[in-house]
Amino acid sequence: MKISKLSTYALIMSLSLSLLSGCKEEPEASLVTTDTAVTTPATETTETVPETTPAPTYSVDEYKNAGINELNSVPILMYHRIYDMKNSETSYTGGNVDKDGYNRTSEAFEADLRSYYEMGYRMMRLTDFVDGNIDVAFGYSPLILTFDDGIRDVVLQGWNDDGSPVFEPGCAIGVLEKIKAEYPDYNVTATFFLNDSLFQNGEEEDRKVIKWMVDNGYDIGNHTKNHAKLGDCDAATIENEVGYMYKKLEEIIPGQYVNIVALPYGSPESMGPEKPQFDKIFEGTYEGFSYTTKATLLCAWTRSYSPFVRDYNNKAIRRIRGYDNGGKEFDIEDNFKQLNDGRRYISDGNPDTIVFPASDNSSGDWLKNTFDHTVISY
Ligand SMILES: [Zn+2]
Image (cartoon, rainbow, N blue to C red; front, top):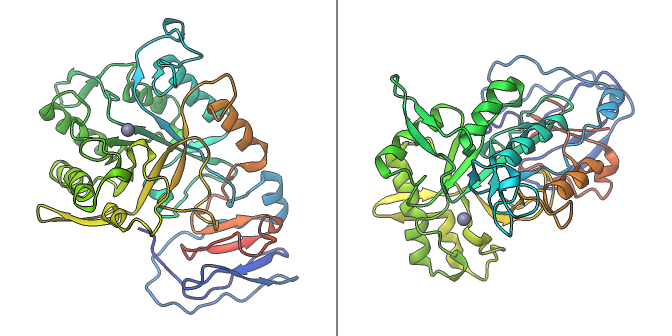
């Protein structure tokens, strides 16, 4: 949870910077520019400010040289099952295991992860993204991994003497753990969206696996009880589908799952007010258990908006399908080509600030500072 610190604030910058002032109640920031360095910090606070180490400040040239831009887009990858296979063992393009590329070989998935790292992406938790808490090192770009359906993303081979699980090396967790050991600064993590069948290793085994996962840096989210197409459901059915899964996760890992729903089939694609039953995705009660949802994910094709821009919608977060289509039609290569061509979010290393070139908000209404961060345009 993001802690709001200041109702009003000013920002000290050592060089001449444009200064934008974000406002909690007013989503559209008003532009205040200054041509000289600001020397007086605001001291008015409305809540207790936690003791933190002051974040480093950077010059305009440093922002410019690193291309810092926190209004640009973020890749949220959508994978399904990772098969313990070589690419040559499938009859489809690249590392696809099926015609549409929803499932991927372990060889291709491992190569994907190495490639994202080499391009300067670093992983972060989806739940932090939704909270506007993007904590990625200066000059690097956030990357978020998601897995839908729990189709044996975790293939359990047994248990060690200390109670920890043994996974098949080529399943999703097997590959992720290998990469985690190899690249400590990659911050390996992923969110797995589950149905009632969990990871299909058997209920008792999977309950233990899920506990291990949340203790080891992974997140578990809600993909509805029966993989229901929510756009076709009435309010009571939605409450059963969504509420059942939250209640089940609460029993397995109390308070440790994420209140995010990956919409099966991406449906409904738009949460318009004309369909009020969709409110039940976000708030409801199932067998006496009350739940809330803070975000929903669409099915995949393209990069997500930054959570700091006008068109970002936490009820329709976009994802990239993790597949290979020869660099065409929004496959991984196509999406990353677009991202790397000036559209990628590049972090200033401070989760409490939003930094971007002033030209990117020249319309005055592209920035949307709902998280009450300090805003720096340059
Ligand atoms: Zn699904």
